[in-house]
Image (tube, rainbow, N blue to C red):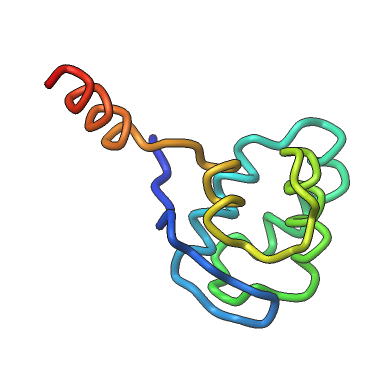
Length: 100
């Protein structure tokens, strides 16, 4: 199942978005053993929350740093792209443009 998150998402701690549970599901799906041990319980407990709770900040920071980002805890387009990657629809569109 492909998880599609709005690529223009901008979310700071304390803010709310219906996109957050999808992003958290993607993070949980890609956890390695080390991060799963550290953050698995928080992700499981807040998996359906649309509120960017303060206890999610260290999770987002760790994921950002692992992706080579500065870890500012702001969920923006770069964070979404690093976590979710490119959707199949975007990939198909790029191929179609290249073929034209």
